[in-house]
Image 1 (cartoon, rainbow, N blue to C red):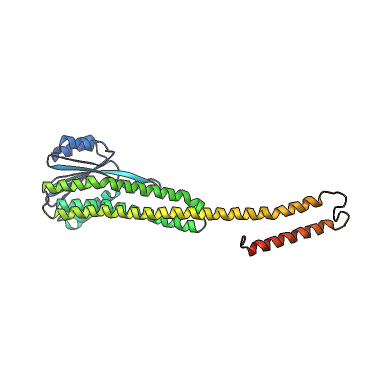
Image 2 (cartoon, helix red, strand yellow):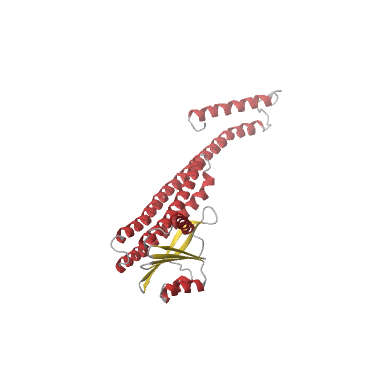
Length: 306
């Protein structure tokens, strides 16, 4: 699918799941070097920067919602920038770019072609991409808040897996954003060297860098919070297990004297107390209940139970 938006003195061409013919046609129209064209034909597993023939290619991978909750996917975006052209290539539906297309189409219907330039368009494009990452981060943070609530409501065992899933998501996001830092910085430096957009582009480049850095700091902060929450969950589990072990120990300690009493009176030897007493059973039961009551009182005063 090909989307084309013309603005003041330039054009943005977006290719979604492009065919080889579509890429070759766009490469021919904008004189894209053969080396850059080859990079566009297939997905690239790692971030990449290349510059040929007055054009700069940047390949970045952005974390996004997966098909299932708790899964973070990596979505590749290839960006080629020249003085009057931006070409983006993506191999799947990427929500922020699709949303940007709809905004531009609506704006064109209302007021005609927007008074944009290529450097402004490039900043807007990155703003939408990083805003989407920020929204994804907030979605994970909301899940983390629900996990925290469940944890303190007594569901420590059930939250273990959820905490590990959130940890994995934050790790993937932090890795993706860290991998972007060097190629994005060099890409903006190449554009500044070509002097396509003049002195004001320096400020735009800094804002683009700042957006990535801000989200990276946000992810690191919440990953630290998540790590503390995981330690708290472990402490709660240990405290719950200690309470269970204490209860079991008290029960065991309470049963031992009763077993001893039952064993003594069950010997049926000559001289056994209460052997010939008609109400011996009830006397023994009452005696045993009295011992249990005294032991429970002792444990309660020591705060071992209750």
